[in-house]
Length: 104
Image 1 (tube, one colour):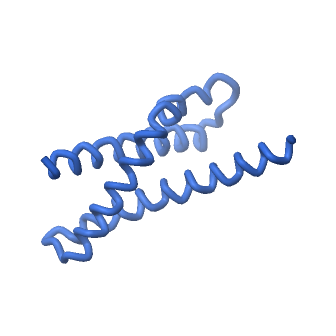
Image 2 (image 1 turned 90 degrees about the vertical axis):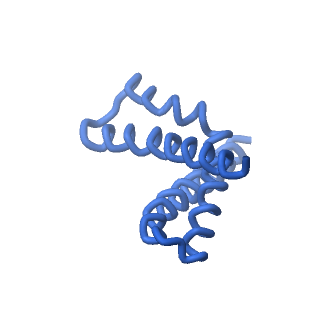
């Protein structure tokens, strides 16, 4: 049952990361204006679940690297992406809170 939970968290974390990365790449290449920013809506919808799943998947990836899993080299890119997503969400939270308190 624990492995099923880890598999589900990896799946949600990868989908969450892709829902952030793919629209970002599109907007950087083509430039997004107005309603084209709606491509980020799935990421906003998945935020509560995506962050929790990303934390669990990041811990799992680090644990597999630390335990010298036979495929530990394959876990490094995932760990880097998951850490980047988490740092990005922390940054967005700090900036949002800062902007909110500047208004009041």
